[in-house]
Image 1 (cartoon, each protein chain N blue to C red):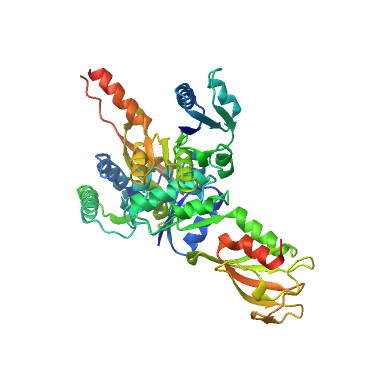
Image 2 (image 1 turned 60 degrees about the horizontal axis):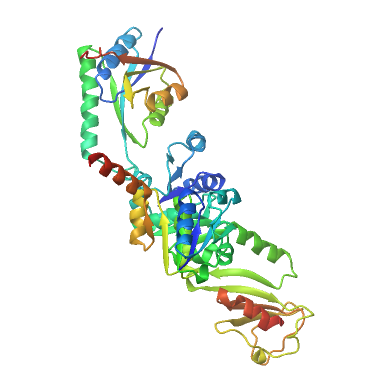
Length: 145
Length: 220
Length: 132
């Protein structure tokens, strides 16, 4: 499998690092492009063009971290910061706009109210992505008591 | 403007589409998962799933920065409560409710709903306009002033034919502003103007005097 | 007192019956005549089929001459609206309704609609019972 344009949506979880690393390694084979993006999701209580300094700072830190993982891999990547009501749609739009051939994202296994849950972003991307999608699940062994 | 639409049925959906096209920020609040999904698939992130009468949902919707809330569910009681909660808890400047039972118009206005829209009344008004024999047609509501403009037709059976305007017992607050005769020449009636069969009288009246105006002009 | 009750569920029927026993003149409304099965055979008030959100139905139930109007249907909004019709349109001196949602109950309290939130009452009673 060759990938020339890879989109890596990062969310600030520990799975981001591995996803970014994987993307760099995939891309290296064909000298492809890697683009890491973060979406600031805004509550309805704020207008869409509101700027929240703390959120922006957090987003920049997350993207800087992806950048440093890429540096460790000695690979150059692009980053982008978006703002929307929900994360799914702008990720898919970005994939369309940059004509990517892979979305690679790290996810964390979640249990909402004791039930397995992928949240809403991952299912949205799987359903609407215009390209292949790889989910990297960060496995953490359950702490036995 | 930031506009919240409560109820994602057909009215809510088309209203939202039109408002989005005008460049407004719009959010629909819809209870049912299936309807919510349909709107989200079609229009993107413009729908919030929840009960638009519930304070908690309205907080999530950012109602305190909304310029307007429009309640268009199929139930009058839900629309009333959504508007009242928006008005009194979130100080939304303008609230609009769809009503099915035209009787509720008075109540809703009394309770602080700024505008009510009744499909039943709109259809009735259209029927009145289409059916020329209808004795009284509503032409325009002067909303904030509590007055309306109506059109009363004098049929050949009206007992007021041959009487002058000053002898008619018009209800207080009602004014005859224009008469259109057969030759289609409009004129402003004076006190001596004599009512003729076929006259079309345009009058301004408070809605509650509508019936007495009709009787004064046509006889009972 | 002359009392009109809207909603003949368990609470409505029980309230109607005990007010009737105390000698009040009770009229109970429900949209479904089947609900009146909950009234005891000895019930001396009147039971009417109709929607309490309709002014004509309320008039028919004698709301204009009543001293109290109580709304006890399953719908918070229906109860709230019926009470406001009774109060604002028919000038009933006292209106009381059940509102399940505590937040809505709090708000309508400030708007002059007297109400009981069965959610709050029940939770408090249970807590009291459990904590002694």
